[in-house]
Length: 289
Image (cartoon, rainbow, N blue to C red; front, side, top):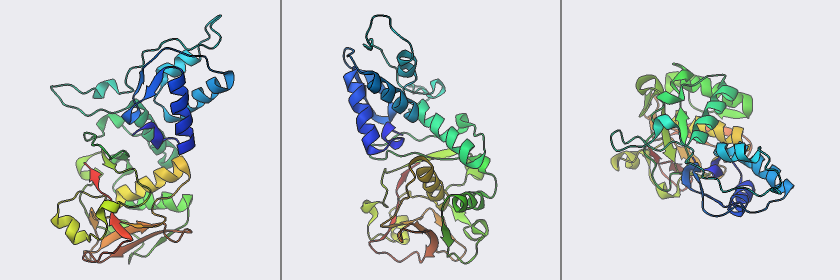
């Protein structure tokens, strides 16, 4: 997950500008690397940089340096070689071919599960796929959610914003019985969807049946609910205000496909749709797994 996943557009632009000013450049997936000499920044800029660095959790070394005064330096930032923000246990190497995982991503998802669900998630057990270009978001699905994952997450949703469920039974766990991925079966894992507030335009006019025929890996209902809570918690925003997500990675007892969206602009809706139906508003979200 890149820094822009933690900050809004204005904050991200400010962070990038300040980093460039002191001789740093923002890279993909939260990696920050020095590219030039230090430069003078004002006290106000210094405070802003500290704040943004802390918010996105990817600049521990810069944070430490900024908090240290340099006598007579007049707020000149020294040349700092900033290593990739990566969990040392997940460093890629030729033998294990482990994916690149920024420490900021680990921190933000640990904090999310702790603050929202009251859970301490063992992030070292999360299975992260290899990052693919254009799939910039990360969704961590933790086995610590328990054996009633859908019910647990939907109850959290109801505490945070207005929710209406139109599936034939309010007990989602007993109705949505088929999922391509289940944390109680495969353990904690992560998927990478595209960084789109609206469902993927790439899957326009594709039914769930067509998605299956094309072997496209798409979001489950659980993954879609978790990312809804995460976006609301981190940005106070909703996904799918002009679309619905076809959760083609899940099916209910009647072989229908769960659907989620905030299209009305007032309530988060969960319903279902016949697997063969399609139109412009109902789209699957492709994920990397």
